[in-house]
Image (cartoon, rainbow, N blue to C red; front, side):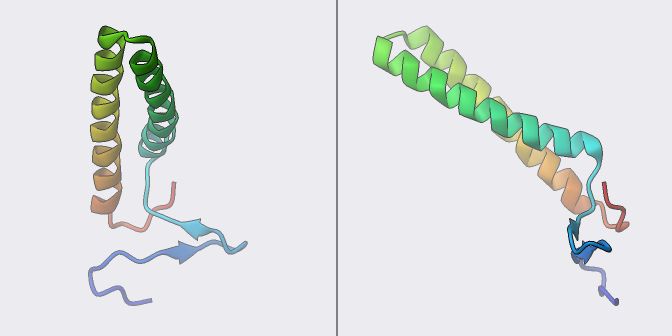
Amino acid sequence: MQDNGKWHEERDARGHAMVPATPRDVVHIRVGSFLLVAFFAFTVLGLITGAPVMTAIALVLAIVTVIDIVLAVRRQERRSNGEAG
């Protein structure tokens, strides 16, 4: 398949999508998404209980986690060797 220098999605023998990713990037995205749910819960809990310090800490950690996820996705997109992880 000719890709003309652009990324394309390949399929394995069972029809599952194969994307160029490293296991490290996948872990960053999956664990990060789990942490975002927890940070959201702590933020809501902090707002309900009136704990501004807990709310602020949860928001800062959520922002750092979003940045980490974005960087992991960008690393995936930059890989163009077709290796599936």
